[in-house]
Length: 113
Image (cartoon, rainbow, N blue to C red; front, top):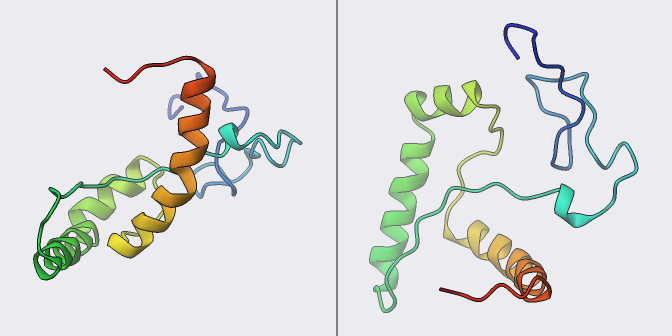
């Protein structure tokens, strides 16, 4: 896109992105399906039974790392605009997204491997 050989037509998500302010979202164009508004997240899963204080400390460290200048530079360069968040925020995303994508996978008859 930097060489202007590719013309973006639309972006996913609920809002336009800073790097492409003139490119509309699917939602703005009237496409209301949830599958055109995915939630992007980078996450780390912890092993079952990890003590709560340890899990929270790891979460805090990952949020701290995600706030670093190096990671923010990478995020900006790749148009990732969501701020780093911890375990509680991810739990909300997971609880919202898991049933949606599970139903979709089942509807496509995908089987876990």
